[in-house]
Length: 135
Image 1 (spheres, helix red, strand yellow):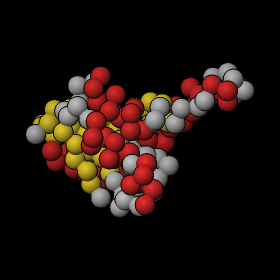
Image 2 (cartoon, one colour):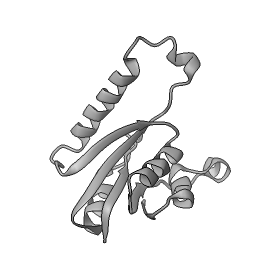
Image 3 (cartoon, one colour):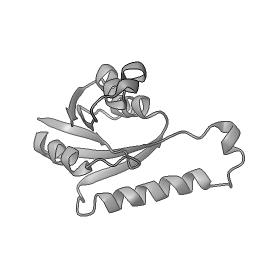
């Protein structure tokens, strides 16, 4: 059983987040912290300079609102949005926040995954803690 569980959620993919959250609840100790994390792709500096002031912060607030909508009724789950490359950001978040298990959804690997690697595969290879992969 785990005390600090991280559940990465990709809002831009059509995956059922409820399954990953139910797994997280099942493996978590009573009173454990469960965090739903969305990684917003980082905007390159050469693009960011043309965005209106405060646009990136507004994007984060919009994503947090979408996550609250997606997780309606799940009041005990913390919501967090970070920016960066998904695989790296998930592992970094786990390292810096004492996460002891990551529950990540995955898809059936395609040909491009064998060359580039999926986010789930990167998390499994580099996570500082246990990783539960659901399909």
